[in-house]
Length: 150
Image 1 (cartoon, one colour):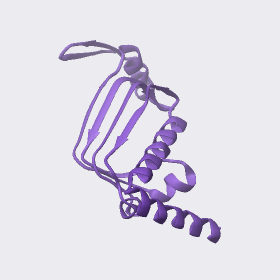
Image 2 (cartoon, rainbow, N blue to C red):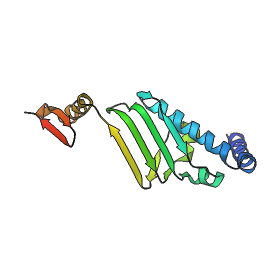
Image 3 (cartoon, rainbow, N blue to C red):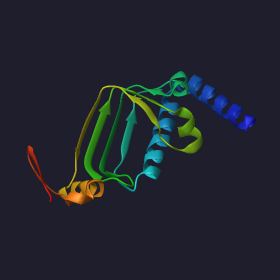
Image 4 (cartoon, helix red, strand yellow):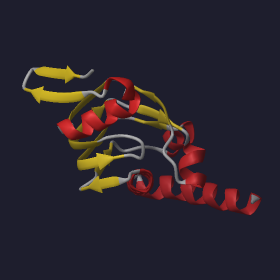
């Protein structure tokens, strides 16, 4: 295990020295994207872009500006979102979890803008799961959400 940590540290050091961070940035982008794909139940056209990062950024678990988009994205126990777009001024994440477990664990998000669409049937299913006693049905119109139930 110690040899592995030393090898990974040496790799990141050399990567940072010789690539100016672009190789490290692409590797982290790929790891985050693969982590999201593994955790997602439904995923279509997933894109993830990071601002250039340094080795110290990686070890601190911090990312400056990034953007994330998907045509469809859904996680277990949740609805499937459509036309998801997220743009953030930065985040802090658990670098160890990303590197060793292949999981993206976000600790903090800076100012973030999110837009998405959720179909009526997905929203209805999600609320029925949370509030089965009222048997809800959702109707969506522009600027209006209507909830009916008993």
